[in-house]
Image 1 (tube, rainbow, N blue to C red):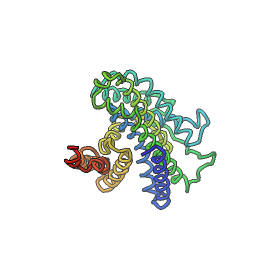
Image 2 (tube, helix red, strand yellow; image 1 turned 135 degrees about the horizontal axis):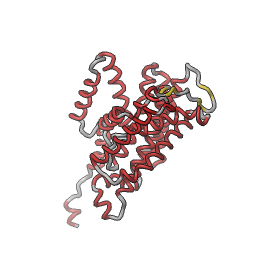
Image 3 (cartoon, rainbow, N blue to C red; image 1 turned 180 degrees about the vertical axis):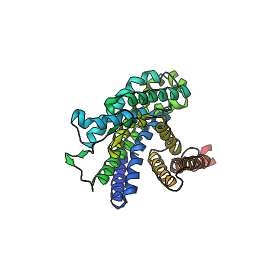
Image 4 (cartoon, rainbow, N blue to C red; image 1 turned 90 degrees about the horizontal axis):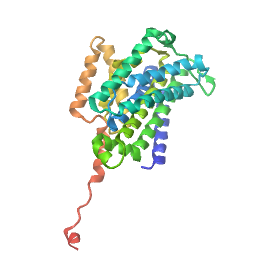
Length: 326
């Protein structure tokens, strides 16, 4: 499908979701907003997985984006929600670009453990830094949109619409990237990096690009989450946060972009109801849910529709033997 057609479909999906948000109750609106913002960070992990990497430290970029968005009103006088999200995204991307050349030297578990180590170093720094609130974190001022303050009765829907619009646009961008030369090269690096090097391309540069994209999306998700929650804390970069993102990535699989946001919403709903009815064992309910998905859909819930699309063109009419003889 051409990029412009994909953009038209994305715009239609965004409008449909925004319309549905007008009818949703407040609790579901909040869950959907959080699912979309977390889905952006998970989408970065999926991009990295597709490019041959595995990150257990996505929480670092999530926290960078969140803290930059939180500090923008006091430090820079910027209150607009979109600008704060862009600042958080760029800050996380800049940090990712610094570490990308180092991390691209490694593969497998060494790569994953290095990302985890960086994330925990960031956790220690944020916990000890009094300028950003230490372990208590920071209170985040509510954003404005188009220089207009958001009233209390409209702020939840406005943040939902903003998050959905950004998430759909990011999903479209990742879909276009996956079909580009760089995206196909990243997939080849995941399959066989040595063969990619023999063909004249750089597997390390491709992996570094995937890592920077991962960091950008992580920062974007964190910047939006901070504005929705109204509070940031060092736990944003803790290994448990990164583990939750990996949880969703495994649940979604890497075969579909939309599956990331579906999996993120499923996790939020299952966690919410599990915490309500099983307050002491809700983690067990989440674990059982993931095991069931892995058992019946080992490639993630994205394989529910991605597999059907790929199987359809495979059926071609057989060439008659008479035509072969001619």
